[in-house]
Length: 365
Image 1 (spheres, rainbow, N blue to C red):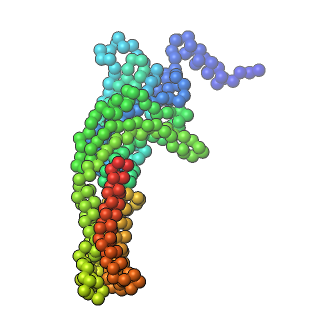
Image 2: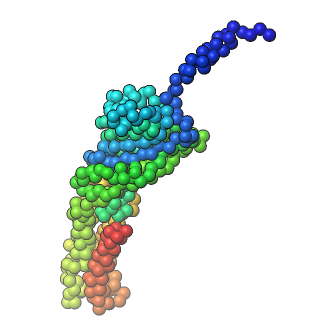
Image 3: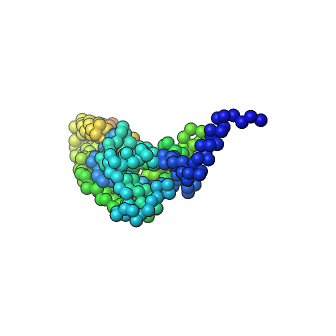
């Protein structure tokens, strides 16, 4: 059988490589397979600064330092040949070195728009362990739970995702070292919020064909400073509760009068009508400035509901008790007078007890 001439060329080329002691150059841009799959990437994220928290937009602006660590034995070298404990590359030099090797293509999953990179640092250790640190600024989406407003605690989260390699090839993880790094910087507090600690959590997001992509989330706990919200929302709502109570408190008993009361119904009814306009105006202001508050159950919504109930009750008292004298017609003047005395103290007690319960539930909840 005649051997093709091209096959001879291949045989001679391989023989030349073997006998000359030269090995083909490794492709460092491919995934490191020396430790098997998936490649374990340890990640930590620390909040360098929090620039703004925008509840209406469900977002916050922050500068985040991301630290990724993995092992690529192909990058190992003799440490005796260098003076420093590791090879270090910064900014443009880091970009150039990364273009020659494999590194995890990690990005922010909850970024709004694009992030701006403020700095980059790459370190390669003699044993092949690699460390990549990036500082990026951007606007991130997050969820705000307003159930305990204005005594609420919120979580500002930044989520990393390995979007280009599935979980079967790259998995994001963390250990105590990464958790300590995530809490190594305490950002300067901004108006209206107190900052707490950072927690890390790992997970996965499903893609097409049930493919899983690894994620890791850094969550900064923050606590609202309640004074501003109490003075601008809670106190006005409590003051509005006094308006329907004036329907009871301003009126007086006068047995000498035919109907048993000393004040005209028209004047008392005007208090309740004025209260309606006041509460509606306050409701409109809150809806405009605090969009998150109108999208669920919270103390502000409950206080508004209590205000509307009390206003309706005030109108009912004005019409049924002062205008048509229903109690007097059915039970007599004495029962009407006793009921009036009970309403004057029982209704305020119940009203402000419910208010206190709403606020206590938010504070201790």
